Image (cartoon, rainbow, N blue to C red; front, top):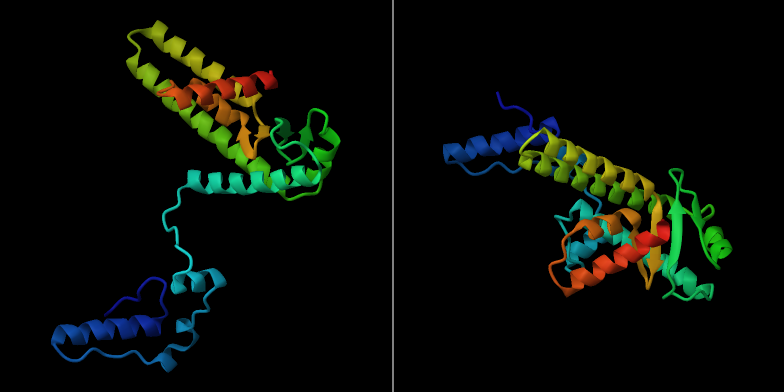
Length: 222
């Protein structure tokens, strides 16, 4: 007895099974009766799917979580950058924000009132919090990976304990930077991102510059 295929109705599964049986027997394939299948075969394409089918939009089938967060970050930064232009706030001036676990945003500096009014009752504040939490999670993950690596390399209990101490320091730093965000030049960066950058060993001149900029932003949070 043929089993129903996952995600199909019994009629569709039966037709599929029957087609396979006849094919094996060397006869002509059985054509499933569309009327018998009913609404199960009716698919209404979304506008985006229609664009994909027409070839006007290239689908990205394997977007990673990091890529998705970066895309969302760029969109949010662009919207905030547009607000700064409308409000007459220089886009090249660094603006420091803090978003708490409820999505409430506070700002520092000359434009504090305008910035906080922008985020008040604005769904972008919740999106900002989600982005911050992702980078905090990623920073914590890297700290745990570093701990595991250092403990494997430890030659004695003292070195293992030193690895534990370094991890606690990193974890405390990540916690201290929770909710911290900088927007400058149309780019949005979280404190956790800057912290990760500051810990990496620079491989080229661009990395050196990125690390120096990250350290400058971190210093502003101290």
